[in-house]
Image (cartoon, rainbow, N blue to C red; front, side, top):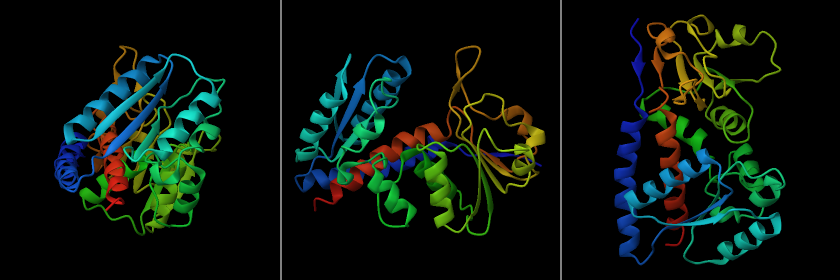
Length: 281
């Protein structure tokens, strides 16, 4: 069996070309899509990711502004968010996670107006997703769902196994795929006999955050394997949860790391920002 690689970089590029056209149309109508990014501290990974987001915004014509605090308290962040909620020039607000330990992310994310919650992490956004109402979807799950759609992979009736229960990927992704007719099994670190479940999956999505966690013997032949892990290998390079070389020839399809979910996740941030701006028409 040959394993087909899903090229997230290529799919992302196609999306960004379309988004650039939409941004141009908005600008002709006097609307410049604007995104505010809030970063606290000097976490190297967060700073690197923010730079990628700023560059992506520039590439499609979205105005971005960075509010970078070396240190801040919850009150300062909520005060800034209140100002951004009222700004007519900003359609999207993104709080770069993780926040320092002394700040409760729930209070900060809950301060973002649901109309500008392009990360889909406000409690109202989460509730609307759970009840299949129109809302912003978190970017990584939205990236996965749109990559599956791009590849014409049916969801309804398929058995999807998700490893991970985070608010960023696992939980919202399970809800999104359930809403699309999948039979979803949600696994996590406390799941007993985990690999007996992964071997039953038509579509296996791993967001465990464990390098080398998924190999040939943990998947069923022909399974679609989505690697949503983002880890640092022993050499310092980025790697996923899946041992790619090991599953080649057994998996039907595979998303690589890097070059899979990552580029599309940032593109979905752009998509949600443009979606918010289009509501101003």
